[in-house]
Length: 278
Image (spheres, rainbow, N blue to C red):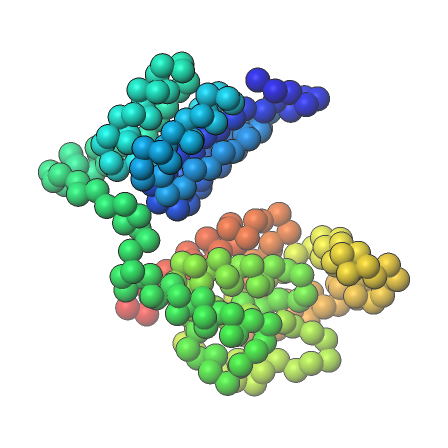
């Protein structure tokens, strides 16, 4: 097993007959539980023929490691399992335990479909519609039809408004985001709105200043500006907090939250709001 200092690495081979998105997400979540080890991921997507599988098997043989897969074709699957056994590398179908449990609970036989979770059904088109809406309403654009949003995110600069909005859109949630900037009035219609869930994002002044400095450096801007002054950022945050408090809008402190955690909190808020309205 390769090592670099205190960090140890291992090869993780992900074999899928679809996009590999599900496989990659599960593998990352599992590997994250072992902080002293870092996976070197090898992703083989759209593996649907013996020749495609053989290319993956050659790499597995050259760099042995754990093999995780989602394969529906029984012949392709059997060949992978046999070859992995011959090479002495562990091999696991990540969906088998879940499918088995569902089969027992539902008393039904599964009907496998390659890439079934990506089918062009109503949910798929709902996500595409949400993504189009969200991109068109990023950073305060097109506020004339904000009432069509499911969620409106407010925040000062560099509180991850756009990434959070896009993540929600991928879950089918129409999301608009609006920057809160001193000296620029909040859109009046926002104050009168009753439909969408309105959420404010805040963070510590130190964290925002750090992110802003990195942003300026990426733009090759090294001069000190008010944009990164912690005292002025504190004033921005106070404006933001007062705005949310006076309108009873919930706030989320994103200082130590990932985008995924922030989005999950908003989804919980949205579900609760919809339950109360039902």
